[in-house]
Length: 124
Figure 1 (spheres, helix red, strand yellow):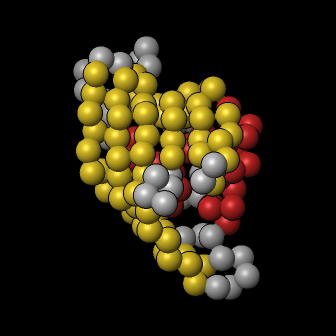
Figure 2 (tube, rainbow, N blue to C red):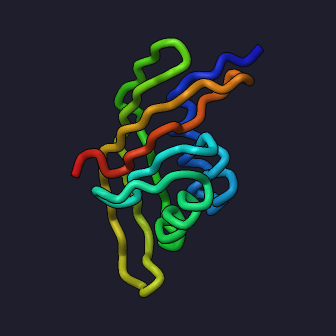
Figure 3 (cartoon, one colour):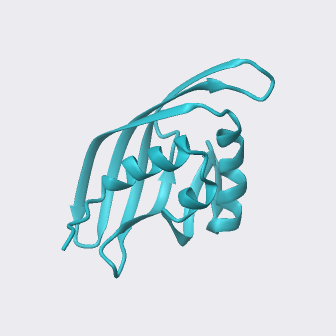
């Protein structure tokens, strides 16, 4: 049986983002997840998260996500990562974004982990 780890989410997010697969990204969140789309702006649920992720995917860039830590307590984990996005915005401008992220993940019944709370801009 496969042993899933909370930090698997970072790799899965990177892979889904780099392939431009919005549905695969959404599958990494519990249905009522919270995403801090912008500092001070929290969206809830898959419909709102889908809309919040679309502008980042429009950059058509390459994302790298490196886990800094993952601390697990039962079926909940707190994580932090360093992420960098290099790409080109729809207006043709080069984009280089770097940030520290902060997430809370929850283990699901199948053993896989999903984001419960995601703050991709925790370092700002």
